[in-house]
Image 1 (tube, rainbow, N blue to C red):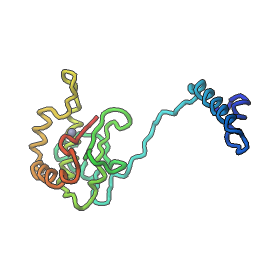
Image 2 (image 1 turned 135 degrees about the vertical axis):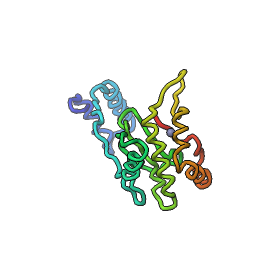
Image 3 (image 1 turned 180 degrees about the horizontal axis):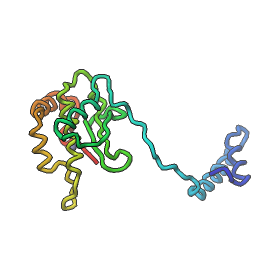
Image 4 (image 1 turned 180 degrees about the vertical axis):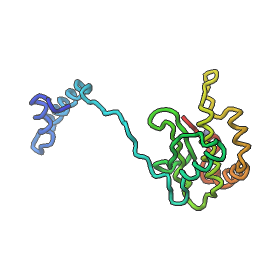
Length: 188
Ligand SMILES: [Zn+2]
């Protein structure tokens, strides 16, 4: 933006960094700079993000890629093709996400907070399975409402052999430490 800025704009920039400039002059300089910026905003071109750097799916305790591959073969005939990894940061509410838009398209993220030996493997397996179901039942909008967990989704989830055990663990151990755990699998 400043590459072809007029001389007086450069002078103003210099002046606000000079100790000897009077307060009133400095205020006028700021105004000159602000005006220039507002008139030249269109010159700022943000490069669209084309790549993303994802964290390693191999965590300290759990290898998400391995869990995903195992579940994919066992329950989905190896038909799913999504990426999986940990969230960048621990999250207090979301345990996992699946998204079908934007840069996070076809990406399952599991909360980094769960990469600890305090979390039983069956819970991680269940969670990954839940997010994988989203890939099968892509969200739909029915009567203006987004439906993320349709009946068929819930049925398959209940049929998952580790479901009961995982729900119990979630209620007992996660609800105490993390608020609003129910309905926390928000997927966009
Ligand atoms: Zn969900």
